Amino acid sequence: MNDHGYTLPDTLAALAILSLSVAAATSGFAVLAKANIATDVSAANAVGLKRASLLLDQLLAQAGPFNNRVSGLEGGRSRFTVPCEAAPCGARLDTDAKGVRLVIYRGGQADRTVKLATQRARFAYFGSLTSGEVWPQVTDERQRLRSVGVIDETAGMPLAVATLWIEQPAQCAFDVVAQDCR
Image 1: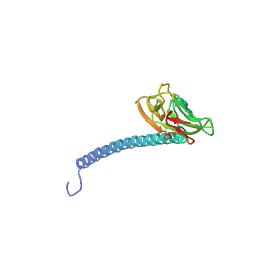
Image 2: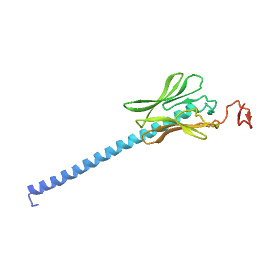
Image 3: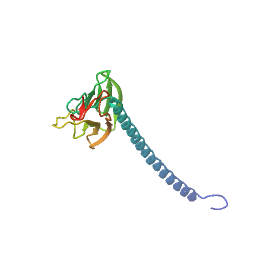
Protein backbone atom coordinates (compact mmCIF):
# COMPACT_ATOMS: atom_id res chain seq x y z
CA MET A 1 0.00 0.00 0.00
CA ASN A 2 1.19 3.45 -0.79
CA ASP A 3 -0.09 6.95 0.08
CA HIS A 4 -2.69 6.81 -2.74
CA GLY A 5 -4.52 3.62 -1.46
CA TYR A 6 -4.46 -0.07 -2.34
CA THR A 7 -3.04 -1.39 -5.57
CA LEU A 8 -5.06 -3.56 -7.94
CA PRO A 9 -3.24 -6.79 -6.96
CA ASP A 10 -3.90 -6.05 -3.25
CA THR A 11 -7.62 -5.56 -3.94
CA LEU A 12 -7.89 -8.70 -6.09
CA ALA A 13 -6.14 -10.80 -3.44
CA ALA A 14 -8.48 -9.48 -0.75
CA LEU A 15 -11.54 -10.24 -2.92
CA ALA A 16 -10.26 -13.77 -3.63
CA ILE A 17 -9.77 -14.47 0.09
CA LEU A 18 -13.20 -13.02 0.89
CA SER A 19 -14.95 -15.10 -1.79
CA LEU A 20 -13.28 -18.29 -0.51
CA SER A 21 -14.43 -17.59 3.04
CA VAL A 22 -18.01 -16.84 1.88
CA ALA A 23 -18.06 -20.10 -0.13
CA ALA A 24 -16.87 -22.08 2.91
CA ALA A 25 -19.44 -20.43 5.16
CA THR A 26 -22.24 -21.13 2.66
CA SER A 27 -21.37 -24.83 2.41
CA GLY A 28 -21.17 -25.00 6.20
CA PHE A 29 -24.66 -23.50 6.48
CA ALA A 30 -25.94 -26.04 3.93
CA VAL A 31 -24.55 -28.93 6.01
CA LEU A 32 -26.14 -27.48 9.15
CA ALA A 33 -29.49 -27.12 7.36
CA LYS A 34 -29.41 -30.79 6.26
CA ALA A 35 -28.57 -31.90 9.79
CA ASN A 36 -31.40 -29.79 11.16
CA ILE A 37 -33.89 -31.37 8.72
CA ALA A 38 -32.71 -34.86 9.69
CA THR A 39 -33.13 -33.99 13.38
CA ASP A 40 -36.63 -32.65 12.74
CA VAL A 41 -37.60 -35.87 10.91
CA SER A 42 -36.19 -38.03 13.73
CA ALA A 43 -38.05 -36.00 16.35
CA ALA A 44 -41.31 -36.23 14.37
CA ASN A 45 -40.88 -40.01 14.05
CA ALA A 46 -40.26 -40.34 17.79
CA VAL A 47 -43.37 -38.30 18.57
CA GLY A 48 -45.39 -40.46 16.16
CA LEU A 49 -44.18 -43.68 17.77
CA LYS A 50 -44.93 -42.37 21.26
CA ARG A 51 -48.41 -41.37 20.10
CA ALA A 52 -48.94 -44.84 18.58
CA SER A 53 -48.05 -46.50 21.91
CA LEU A 54 -50.35 -44.12 23.76
CA LEU A 55 -53.27 -44.81 21.40
CA LEU A 56 -52.81 -48.58 21.72
CA ASP A 57 -52.63 -48.22 25.52
CA GLN A 58 -55.86 -46.21 25.53
CA LEU A 59 -57.61 -48.76 23.32
CA LEU A 60 -56.61 -51.67 25.53
CA ALA A 61 -56.83 -49.88 28.92
CA GLN A 62 -60.33 -51.08 29.77
CA ALA A 63 -60.17 -54.31 27.81
CA GLY A 64 -59.16 -57.70 29.06
CA PRO A 65 -57.96 -59.81 30.52
CA PHE A 66 -57.43 -62.00 27.48
CA ASN A 67 -56.32 -65.61 27.61
CA ASN A 68 -55.76 -68.19 24.91
CA ARG A 69 -58.86 -70.24 25.85
CA VAL A 70 -61.58 -67.57 26.04
CA SER A 71 -60.42 -64.36 24.45
CA GLY A 72 -62.31 -61.27 23.43
CA LEU A 73 -59.29 -60.05 21.47
CA GLU A 74 -58.79 -61.59 18.06
CA GLY A 75 -55.80 -60.51 16.09
CA GLY A 76 -53.57 -61.18 13.14
CA ARG A 77 -50.61 -59.55 11.42
CA SER A 78 -52.41 -56.43 10.20
CA ARG A 79 -55.49 -56.03 12.44
CA PHE A 80 -57.01 -56.86 15.81
CA THR A 81 -60.42 -56.35 17.38
CA VAL A 82 -61.42 -55.95 21.03
CA PRO A 83 -64.83 -55.89 22.69
CA CYS A 84 -66.11 -52.39 23.43
CA GLU A 85 -69.33 -50.44 23.86
CA ALA A 86 -69.25 -49.06 20.29
CA ALA A 87 -68.45 -52.40 18.64
CA PRO A 88 -66.39 -53.11 16.64
CA CYS A 89 -63.26 -51.55 18.09
CA GLY A 90 -59.64 -52.30 17.33
CA ALA A 91 -56.59 -51.31 15.37
CA ARG A 92 -55.28 -51.98 11.90
CA LEU A 93 -52.12 -51.27 9.92
CA ASP A 94 -52.77 -49.66 6.54
CA THR A 95 -49.88 -49.77 4.08
CA ASP A 96 -49.56 -47.64 0.94
CA ALA A 97 -46.79 -46.03 -1.12
CA LYS A 98 -46.15 -43.44 1.62
CA GLY A 99 -45.60 -46.02 4.36
CA VAL A 100 -47.58 -47.56 7.20
CA ARG A 101 -50.33 -45.93 9.24
CA LEU A 102 -51.74 -47.22 12.52
CA VAL A 103 -55.51 -46.70 12.51
CA ILE A 104 -57.49 -46.98 15.75
CA TYR A 105 -61.17 -47.52 15.09
CA ARG A 106 -64.25 -47.43 17.29
CA GLY A 107 -67.72 -48.35 16.12
CA GLY A 108 -66.26 -49.43 12.79
CA GLN A 109 -65.09 -45.87 12.03
CA ALA A 110 -61.50 -44.62 12.02
CA ASP A 111 -61.01 -42.68 15.25
CA ARG A 112 -57.28 -41.86 15.26
CA THR A 113 -54.48 -42.34 12.74
CA VAL A 114 -50.70 -42.22 13.23
CA LYS A 115 -48.06 -42.43 10.50
CA LEU A 116 -45.32 -44.86 11.47
CA ALA A 117 -41.66 -44.45 10.49
CA THR A 118 -41.44 -47.64 8.42
CA GLN A 119 -42.49 -49.18 5.13
CA ARG A 120 -43.45 -52.61 6.55
CA ALA A 121 -44.97 -53.40 9.94
CA ARG A 122 -47.07 -56.07 11.65
CA PHE A 123 -48.76 -56.71 14.98
CA ALA A 124 -47.23 -59.13 17.48
CA TYR A 125 -48.94 -60.60 20.54
CA PHE A 126 -46.91 -61.39 23.65
CA GLY A 127 -48.45 -63.92 26.01
CA SER A 128 -47.27 -65.07 29.42
CA LEU A 129 -45.60 -68.11 27.79
CA THR A 130 -45.13 -67.42 24.07
CA SER A 131 -45.34 -64.70 21.46
CA GLY A 132 -46.66 -64.80 17.93
CA GLU A 133 -48.38 -63.11 15.01
CA VAL A 134 -51.91 -64.19 15.97
CA TRP A 135 -54.05 -64.18 19.10
CA PRO A 136 -55.42 -66.33 20.60
CA GLN A 137 -52.49 -68.68 20.28
CA VAL A 138 -53.08 -72.42 20.24
CA THR A 139 -51.12 -74.02 23.08
CA ASP A 140 -51.82 -76.71 25.64
CA GLU A 141 -51.03 -74.41 28.54
CA ARG A 142 -53.25 -71.55 29.65
CA GLN A 143 -51.63 -68.19 29.08
CA ARG A 144 -52.64 -64.55 29.33
CA LEU A 145 -52.01 -61.85 26.78
CA ARG A 146 -49.47 -59.46 28.32
CA SER A 147 -48.90 -56.94 25.51
CA VAL A 148 -49.58 -56.08 21.88
CA GLY A 149 -46.83 -54.55 19.77
CA VAL A 150 -46.27 -53.05 16.35
CA ILE A 151 -43.09 -54.53 14.89
CA ASP A 152 -40.99 -52.95 12.13
CA GLU A 153 -40.48 -55.90 9.77
CA THR A 154 -37.49 -54.30 8.07
CA ALA A 155 -35.46 -53.75 11.25
CA GLY A 156 -37.16 -56.41 13.40
CA MET A 157 -37.66 -53.86 16.18
CA PRO A 158 -40.77 -52.86 18.12
CA LEU A 159 -42.18 -49.49 17.13
CA ALA A 160 -45.02 -49.29 19.64
CA VAL A 161 -46.06 -51.54 22.53
CA ALA A 162 -49.21 -51.54 24.66
CA THR A 163 -49.15 -53.47 27.92
CA LEU A 164 -52.32 -55.04 29.30
CA TRP A 165 -52.30 -54.48 33.04
CA ILE A 166 -55.63 -56.08 33.87
CA GLU A 167 -55.15 -59.54 35.40
CA GLN A 168 -58.82 -60.36 36.02
CA PRO A 169 -62.22 -58.93 35.15
CA ALA A 170 -63.90 -56.46 37.50
CA GLN A 171 -66.51 -59.09 38.48
CA CYS A 172 -64.14 -61.87 39.48
CA ALA A 173 -64.51 -64.63 42.04
CA PHE A 174 -61.04 -66.14 41.78
CA ASP A 175 -60.86 -69.96 41.93
CA VAL A 176 -57.45 -71.01 43.30
CA VAL A 177 -57.69 -74.55 41.92
CA ALA A 178 -58.66 -73.53 38.36
CA GLN A 179 -56.41 -70.44 38.53
CA ASP A 180 -59.14 -68.38 36.89
CA CYS A 181 -62.26 -66.35 37.63
CA ARG A 182 -65.67 -68.00 37.99
